[in-house]
Image (cartoon, rainbow, N blue to C red; front, side):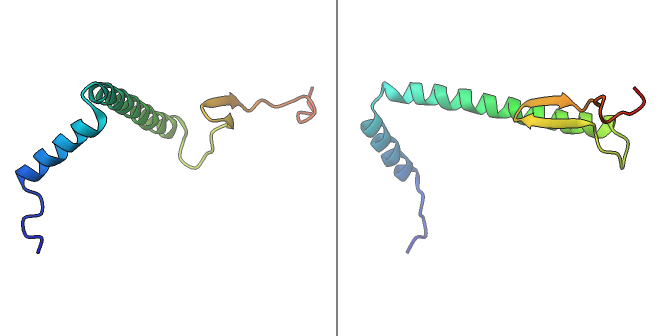
Amino acid sequence: MLRNGLEPWHLLVVAIMIILLFGSKKLPEAARGLGKSMRILKSEAKAMKEDGTAQSSAAPAGSAPDVVRSAPGETTAAQPTAESNPAH
């Protein structure tokens, strides 16, 4: 029944329906928004990948890094306090 499910004229009909539904003014705005979102996603993925390689190469195997995550995107180094360090 669905031998040739997606032929070129099907794509043409879908494109015409999208243009009629959204209008020719909204489509360039939507494309710009989609492109901007894709650029942000790509840069964030690249930053996460670089973070992962930087952390794994900076810390020796088997040791945990001294970083406490307090909020997404915000890191603070774990500092010993006077109460926890009796030598002071």
